[in-house]
Each structure stands twice: as structure tokens, then as C-alpha cells.
Length: 89
Image (cartoon, rainbow, N blue to C red):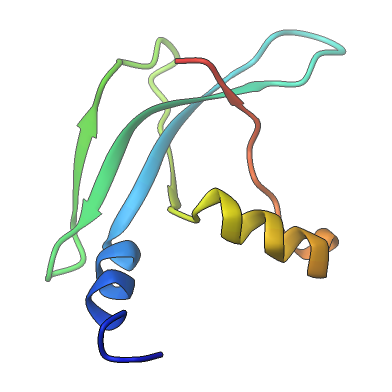
């Protein structure tokens, strides 16, 4: 990795995406709704910013992966990755 990309990589590692998982009942896949973002502080605690409040009270926080990178990884090794299906927010 070159020096120009190092700040971007560090920033990306500290950025996380916040979802709530909506159960739609029997025989239907759950919907992953993106409802905010989280940022890792120097002491490894999180600041969470929500655009919506989950009715079920549950947050699911994942590392951010750009869509292009995710698609590239999926072509290389599809069984080892999982990306939620994101519903319209």
C-alpha cells in the first residue's frame, strides 16, 4: 500500500455501517436496513450516529466494505463472504 492511500485505509477501518435486521415472518428472508454509521475512537469505543431508531431495539454493526471491493471479492471467493441485502431506507 502506498503512502497516499494509508490515511484512507485507516479512515475506512474506523468507519462502520449500522443496520437493523427486520424479521418478515416465516418463509421470508429478513431485510437488512441501513440506519446509520459508527466510528471507532482511539480507545476502541464506538460513536454511533443513527438516522432511524430500530423498532426491535437491535443494532448490527459491520465494517464498511465498498461495493466494488465486495463484488470483486465475491468473484474470487464467494463462499467466504457475506454481505447483507440492504432494503431501501
